[in-house]
Image 1 (cartoon, rainbow, N blue to C red):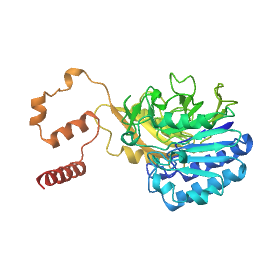
Image 2 (cartoon, helix red, strand yellow):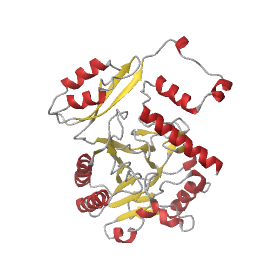
Image 3 (cartoon, rainbow, N blue to C red):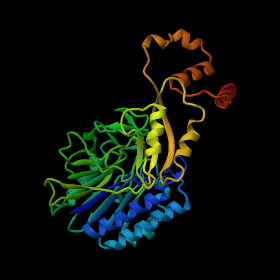
Amino acid sequence: MKILHTSDWHLGHTIYNYDRMEEQTAMLEQMVTLVAEHKPDVFLLCGDVYHTSQPSSSVQTMFTDAMVKIHNAHPDMKIIVTAGNHDSGTKHEIFRNPWMALNVHVIGTLNKINRDEHIIEIPHKGYIIAIPYVNERNMPEGFFQELIEQVNKHNTENLPVIMTAHTTVSGCDFSGHDDCSEYVVGGIDSIDIRQFGDRYDYLALGHIHHAQYIPGSQKKARYSGTPLPVSFDETYDHSITLVEISQHGEPVQSETISIFNPRPLVSLPSQEMASWEQAKQLLQEFPSDIEAYIRLNVEIEDFLPPEAQMEAVNLTQGKKCRFCYINAKRKDRDKSETKILTVQEFQSEKPIDIARRYAEDSGVDFSQEMIDMFMEAQKMVEDEIRD
């Protein structure tokens, strides 16, 4: 059985108010080309089809048009789409029946009663156990293994068994994701690879954006990663995975296929930090004919000049690149310059003073507008407590 494994398209994602539909359309066109070229038996899209649970009509149209084109590129292929944590699982399933006419199987929610709904047979090729994103509190214990055993009872031809999931697996490389740890990535608690049971041939994972095999899985569990970067910190290659399995229990053969991004996310400088003057020079020297999104990595003593943002915007006038933001970080200071608060001191501080201290340590100018917004938010919290 031959499978094209992809995930985390995040259609509708914008970056600093720039519409990315042009890049997303180019990515989808590459998917169509790859299907026509490799003619897989199954096309797996493992969650986070959209960036939000309420995508616009134009974004939904972009997705549906792509599904039709992908189907037309190889009509005998099964297309299996599962919902991710960014998607609305119930909305995914609204058009489940019409989609079946195009060999598209949509699995948006977990069906604990009719579990056969999650098992999709590819006649004389293999079985797909399609599981969407499920909050860990709602996942029945042993659910994965039960489905595997159910498939193996009927798998008299010894065909490959593939399982999907959209979650965080312990030990994965979550670089590029914001506000995460080894325990939680993107709001999803990590689970041990052993919780998926055994006797599957390949576990097609979604959610983590860095393409990788899971340590300890004997190259049977893999994140395909996102085909387009979602943040500037995703400084790795973006791709999909072509998987081939000859028979149940046989080793997995896989190939990583890079996806071209017509408008890459570029940091200046690409490594380390630069002074504000150096960063401006790099932006001024950036080629005018290269389409890219630009982030400036700037190291500062205290604060950026008030006109910094406008200066950066002006330096991109006449260029095809799009300036996004200045990633300003304060120089490391001697620890003796930083006051460490005791618990008692912290409790005695006013919230506004703590916020001002945090902004100062982060190298951000705590403007009057920010102060007013903070005070308004604090008042709303206090009103809620009183009520």
